[in-house]
Length: 466
Image (cartoon, rainbow, N blue to C red; front, side):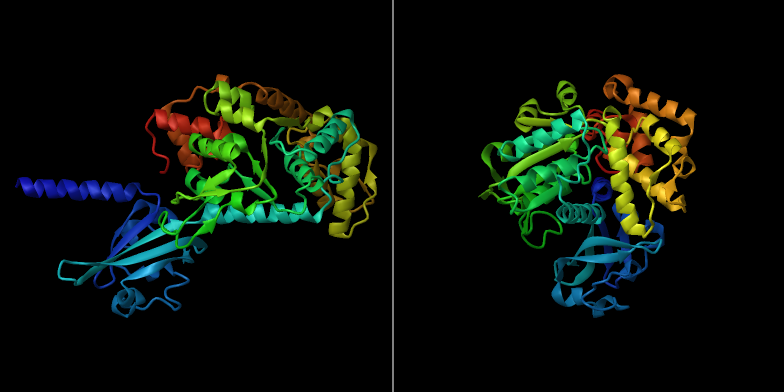
């Protein structure tokens, strides 16, 4: 009786471990029928366990089941002949009909007499990583297609100080920290520094530090060796190594977890990296530029950002002014965006009416230059004349009440977020559920950093995944 109770406890404990895994895991019996389906499989596939048990893995519609459509019987499947399948990237079909990029791995399970008793498969969701890589790729292409200095528009005193800082920064090899609100053009400034520097013929590698989870960001930055983790089927060079003899631009640096902060500090100090799962140190010759819209010194005071890393990053800081502090540049920016939209749409818009320009000059521009660009693009959709009028602009710019609201929100946003937010464990759990456990989204919603959310989760013993 005691042995039976112990066995039941072991099975329950093992089941809880499988359900807590971030990777999808499912098992099949010797007939190819699904016998277990963990919670991550439910999330990745959209199918609850109740709809999969007793069915075959054909329900996943895998794009690369040994190069052909999955057979009806498990005895005909290549996994039986091979005993294991090499981890490979492929697509599985979500219940709602869209493809999900994954790394898929499978192994045959045998009993002590070497008889096949089933198959276990693991599925690693690559959705976040694929999206981040695509964004980075598009950003690099976009930055290389334009003259990055000419793309920073303005003649105000504030923007001229930025031009001077770019010139000085480009002539040095120091680590640069670009600070400014969202939409002020931090990415353009990083590109301008790179393409005016001695490293202009080397690569410019862009990484958005808020776009990936800690484990994916570690692999993306530092690379990994074959077998370092589930799905690591081959050695992979990280972004630091890709930036050799060039520049790496780390955007949203304030979102780094404490673990990645330690590893980044080591890279800055030693100029060498270790791939995940490897002990070999690789020397790198790179220039590091970082950017954030966060108040890093306040994050240092709050204990969520390392003080030694902060001072390593801000060897040469560049502060970008918000658009509301350089409104004399708005007419120049408007002309620039109108020229771009004329080329894209084939229209021949020649400018703004006085009423439209007055509205633009009176706006508080919480979204800065990016918001202004979007407003001009919106106007092009509606405008069928040679001049953009007030009626063509977005409603939030035209409505006086909304302008007042934006101004109030802007002044609130400059306060210290941690002094305004009183968060409870239940409230944080609700926010995580509402945002699909994306800690960066939760942080942006309540005005806290990714690292602050991580600290609260650790304090209240909340798992990093649902």
